[in-house]
Length: 407
Image (cartoon, rainbow, N blue to C red; front, side, top):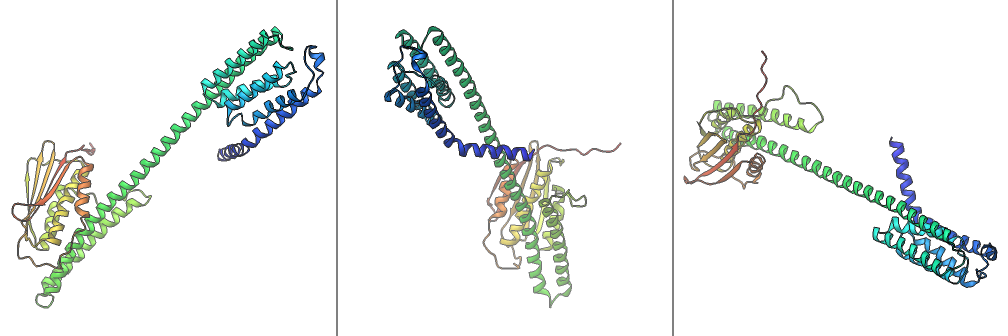
């Protein structure tokens, strides 16, 4: 199949390259052969009324034949020149010879390579000219010749019109196929970009949160390493545990970039139920976070659960990085159409910073906005009335896939 396609492609390329030269050769050959036919024919034997061959008839015949050289590039002009050459030969009572046959090729070229209107006008002009010549009683044009000529013109026109229509349909199908291929490439490119953004968001959330905890504990350990050995050891243990968790989650997400089946031992995505572990982590960093759940808790779509978890995680991470608050309020409200998440940072407190504050890149909040938008939710953040910072998110319920239970 591949070899056949390559051969077809090579043949098509060769045809495109040789097409201009082919028509040129065809035009020259038509002019030479038409002139040779005119010069070699005993015109008196064909019809005694025919005039002897002269320079005018030979010149008009050669020009008419040469006009076929641009039958595809300028089909209308080629047909007009050809018809004029034939008229000059015929009305001067000279032998038309091979031009009567080449006229069919000229009309065919006009119908195939021109517009439908041009083809119809070419057919009508040919029929009118033949009938006018018959009325003028030019030599070598009997009634049977007229009927045969008109029938051949109509037949050639019908054949050319059918081929032109088929080529137009093929060109349209090819255009549609190219548009579909372009759209498919765009969809694939967009899917790759969306997947890269999704993985980038996951990596940011995991790495930023873990690094913030590690930075806080490293600062605590460095501060008390000489005065409170047990506290320093506790800080190192938290750093080690946080590093292991971050490494496990990072490996799990990087596995998505490889063409491998999902690891059955990979940890599942975090849910709202995992917020307790998140609160415990920031408690070790000096932030007392309180979770309040309103409404009847129920399972939500995994992506909704994960996004809710990431909202709280990013909010607490920003507190560790940019706020001196020692407490936070987390409210989870289950509504009929989804779940609302609010994280309030009072923005004040004596908590010691582990490292100088630095401007935020904004990637975390941008990532949360993207997550929320993809789920059809609403995302807002800004200063709170308490002087701190508030993050508020509404997420729709989304479809819930209930796992099958064995009887």
